[in-house]
Amino acid sequence: MIITIKGGFDKDGLPERVRSVDVSSGEVIGIVGPTGSGKSSLISDLEQFAQGDTSSRRYVLIDGSPPDPEMRHDPRKKPVAQLSQNMHFLADMKVCDFICMHARSRGRDPGLLSKVLEITNTLTGEPVHANDNLTELSGGQSRALMVADIAVISDSPIVLIDEIENAGIRKKEALRLLSGEGKIVLVVTHDPLLALMTERRIVMRNGGMVNVIKTTDEERRFCDSLFRVDTWLLSLRESIRRGEVLSATEAVI
Amino acid sequence: MKMVVIAGTPGSGKTSVLMHTVKNLQEMGIRPAVVKIDCLWTEDDARINRLGVPVRVGLARDMCPDHYSIYNTEEMVSWASSQGADVLLNETAGLCLRCAPYPDRALAVCVIDVTSGPNTPLKIGPLLTTADVVVATKGDLVSQAEREVFRERVVEVNPKCRIVEANGLTGKGSRELADIIKYSREIDGEMLLRHNPPLAVCTLCTGELRVSKKHHRGVLRHLDGFVEYVGE
Image (cartoon, rainbow over all chains, first blue to last red):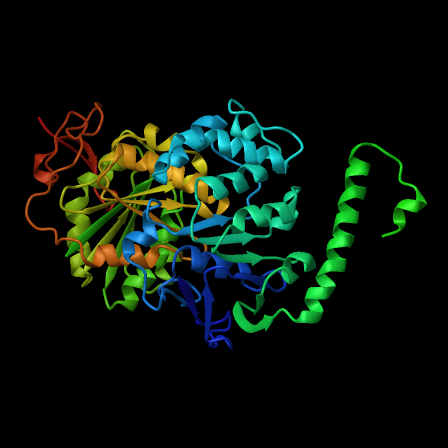
């Protein structure tokens, strides 16, 4: 599968500098840019397969053609899973009822609930139970459940991720779970590690796509040391969370 | 002429959806006229007027706003046609969930806020169950899973409806709604309500479904504010 983003117009109504981007199965693409530059709008255009009918007037094509209208609206046919920035559930339902109902809406087996919970609990320190109320979950628990739900229930060939780094969960593990084999993954990020884990990144400015940068070999080598820094920071964070006092020796990477 | 009745829960974004839809209709070369029904006060007419379409406000005051809207349907239609409109967009006050002020030949649009939770579609009755189009707003505030669960609940109570995901801030979904309006039927002849309003004091309250003014008795308010008693 190839998806094509045909450039539309930026916030000033000028044509986007990048006129067309193709993304193929198995590719992980980053979307970067300052706050308000239009990253979330681009994700939203992809989610709804914009056909010149959104504020950016972009077109999103699948294998060169506009998608079937049913594919745009019916979750059973929709090939897109999206992890948005929302950190909380608003639905006043039990975890089990919600996940089973979501499985039904996607035409999946409600028996997948146990797998969703199992994966959720690998991503968060505080376990989530089937009978917990959705609205009472913490930010980290909600986010972990959203990631697991996308990986298991919304298992789709196209995955859109909006800023996973703020989630308070294991982000590299989450990205690995969400991307899977042969999927098209687009990830909005401010995080250098996540950005360099992608093959290319689309640069956004003033509502428009202004550049597409291929991750260089130099950046890839850099990525390894970034990963070590990130792991170190995570371990310090865990120590602080456990109420420990850090010593100077821990400052050595 | 076509007629669209836009109903929905208070604060669900009816006016924002309506305004974006008006812009899309204009781009398609379709001339809309808008009648905004409210209870006591509104300034939405000034907002809508800036789009350069004919706007009229009806304040129901002490009459049930949905009864008022139904009772004045003929007047709204003739006013819109005198303005040279191709389509009359009637936005209701959106207060009483028991009423569904949809005439059968009009396109019935129910605007509902996704953040109100997946139990809402089960609670709001004929307003949702007799609608042709259900516009789900504020979906950007919840996860994709929650939007899909919400949608499943809507389909449970109204399996035939067309669901449009819309956003009142960005205008998402309004083009799709404008397209549905474009291909909706023309209104002609006697219209019938899709569902009876609740029991109260005027003929509409006691189950009269015929829209035309000549069938109604009671204390009734006209679009221009004139109140009269019709009956023995």
